[in-house]
Every structure is written in structure tokens, then in C-alpha cells.
Image (cartoon, rainbow, N blue to C red; front, side, top):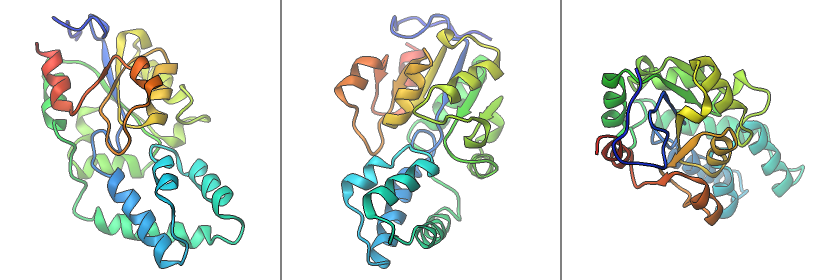
Length: 227
């Protein structure tokens, strides 16, 4: 089904599909990831600067590993760092990740309107699907594009272009919903009207100009779509 807007000239009208990022957009996981990285670095005797931790938000693991190695040098115990930080993070997520404000409101609205939905995430499979399933969100999505599905992850547009293609929808008729700088760059480069709902990182001036909307929560997107 196609969702017709009443009031937002900045979004396609009608909307044929919505593509969501996962971590930090639907699931409140980015802060837990950052905390696990910081605690692990401290425990190993390699404190990670705040700027480095924030620069890793929304970036796939391969790139994060290169960033850490480049910043901290060849003596940094990369394998031990990821093993320990993964254990900390998964322990924090054992009961399931909490949802970002407005997640169920917007997903239920789009599902009731019959709007196809997809995920475009830098998290690998099957972890992405398992995380969505544990949160009760997997049934909402017709397509889940993970790190494994693309050669060039975010900030390259490939994840969003693939999600739109698998949905059978022209990118110009979609909305992307993102929280991170890399995700916004990916979605806007794909030619998709992008709504940024910041989590750990505020938008840059460039992203403020590129996004259709920058909103405090997914509930505010719901308000726009139902105005």
C-alpha cells in the first residue's frame, strides 16, 4: 500500500516504502556499545578517547578495526579487545535491547497502513535478525539488509540501494530513517529522503542541509505522517 502525506513537502508523496537503520534508530544499543568499548579499553590499559569512541558510531566493524589500529598502533590487542567488549555488550543485551522512543508507534502505524518496510544495518547476519527477533520487531520487515549482503557498507549508498531494490521500490519514493552520520551519508547518497533521529551524535551542518527532517524521536515522525 502507498502512504499519502498531508503535510510534508520534504518527503515523497506518496511514500512507497520506509527503510530503517537498526542500532541507535530502532534499538537503543549504540550507548551500550560505546560503554562496552570504553570499559574494555580501560580494563586493558588502553583508554579510548571520547572522540574516537564517537567516530566509531554507525560504522561497520571492519572499518572500526582499522580506525582502532590506526589510532592506537600495532601493539593494541585488537582481538582481545573485541572478544572482551563483545562479551560485555552481549551481557548487557541478554534480556533484549530496549527500544528507542516511538519505535512501536511508527512501526505499528506503517504496518497498519500497509507500507513495506526494510532494515539497512551495518550489523552482520545472523546477529541482526536475532537482535530484531528478540526485540519483537522482525515480523514488521519485508527485507533485512545486513553487512553480509553488501560489498560496500555505510557510508556507501549500497545498503540502501539494495534494500529499495529488494522491496521493488524506486529510492526516490522511499524514506530512510537514521541516527548516525555514516547512515545519513549512505541514505542521502542513495537518493532517499532521509529523516535523522540523532542518538549519540548531533547532525553536522552538512547533514542538517541534506536531511528532509531532523527529529527528536520516532514519535515526531509519526506525528508528521499523521498530520
